[in-house]
Image (tube, rainbow, N blue to C red; front, top):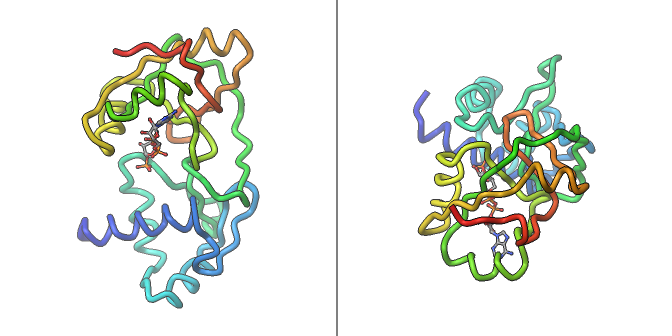
Length: 182
Ligand code: HQG
């Protein structure tokens, strides 16, 4: 399957499964699951041709493993990155490693120093386990800079951490006190 088609379908799935399900008349349950047949029908009404084969190809080829299919193969969800208020994934709390990393762009640094890391429109601040991943996340917005987060220290002080199925670490807010510039 050609990569342009996969990429476009992946962006469309991210949009409807994380942010705007109502744009195609789709309902997600609290855990973010959408019925695949309804998703396909809703997309078709908006002129986006999706079929099961394409959806499964996107899921299996996603570099970041963004999506999951239910055991009965009837449902699909995004595993993290939501902004829609209709979803509240029950991630399991987990002790993080000593350090986690957040990739951002240099132009956000001043604001981050003032406010710490904020989740913005998403439900959580996203953190990576390694510097290389964080660098590529930061690159999306400009000149990348990697921040080192004292994750274990935060956890020991009562901050909650979660890990999505695809390995991305999530937390609510990172105060500047726990942030060091790499
Ligand atoms: C920044 C991708 C100013 C933050 C990636 C980031 C990730 C602040 C931007 C996932 C700030 C938000 C999420 C503050 C945070 N002042 N800027 N106080 N606090 N920021 O896209 O973490 O391809 O919502 O540094 O791999 O970049 O979508 O979050 O630059 O896992 O699957 O505000 O998205 O995955 O941007 O990326 P985003 P993110 P997918």
